[in-house]
Amino acid sequence: MAVEQSYHHGNLHAALLTAAEAELEDRGLEGFSLRGVARRAGVSHAAPAHHFGDVNGLLTALAAVSFERFKAAMESTAAAAPPDPISQLVAIGLGYIDYATGHPHLFGLQFASERPDRNDPRLARHAAASLVTLQERVDALVRKGGRKSDAADDLAPKFWAITHGLATLFAMRRSPAFPTTDPEERRMRFERILRSVADDTP
Image 1 (cartoon, rainbow, N blue to C red):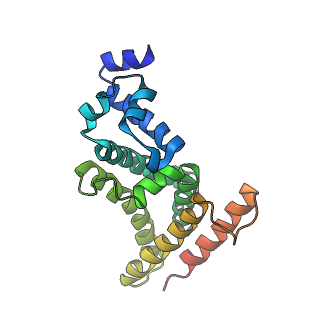
Image 2: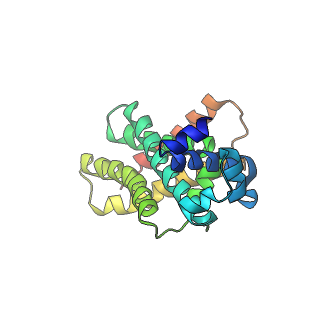
């Protein structure tokens, strides 16, 4: 009934994206299918194709949604952090890692999969906006410290690479260097690592 109501109110597009996220989380990219999404949404198997064209079109739309949420997650973490530039940059990194570990399949779709169409305007816009969020904090840190303008060019890829590496290791459950299962202890270690990178601005 809920799906039928969504359809009649023009929300089938959103309902299919919700079903696609569940399908991806349960079955991964290898088992992902339009029929599986349709079955979860309680609609005909032709409905996803009608809205998204093919399976890669649906995955492209889902990746765009995930990038939008990814950006919001980083900004939410930053909003709760102290306002100084180093704390803000570290908070962006922690939000980045939190999103990856909380949504590993979506994170993999965003950054590791060849299935989404990277030239899709909506996907490209949200992907770029999420990384601007990080770059803005780097620029603020460089300006605050009165450092050379090219310091941002060095710090941004360095901070991103380390943050993304940590996020990927934990999203993929491949983190022998961090054997602790205590989430608070692990988060404190992440924070120390990210802060050391942010402090090491030339």
